[in-house]
Length: 110
Image (tube, rainbow, N blue to C red):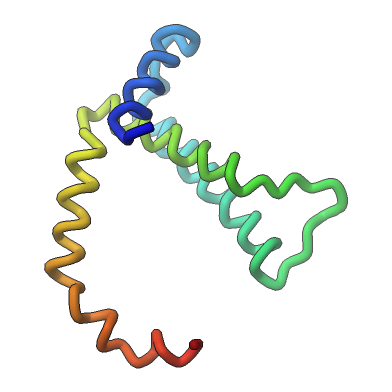
């Protein structure tokens, strides 16, 4: 599935089952909540925090939730994520093409 297809699929789902998009500020709050869920899992799985008994640690599902809400926000604000992501990669490549290769800190953990 492409990013464009994901945006279209989310839009079709919202129109078929969701009645309408939540407003932009509500979706921003939901995105923040979902990113918090990812952070909780990361802290327990890869960090020093232990999981609570019976706690669900489904990173893939939480990352998909983040992507879902991100697509919602992009759709309702007219952002083409494919185009935006392509431009973003170009920006990072131009800006950082030598920066990370020259960062000695990145070689310390090899």
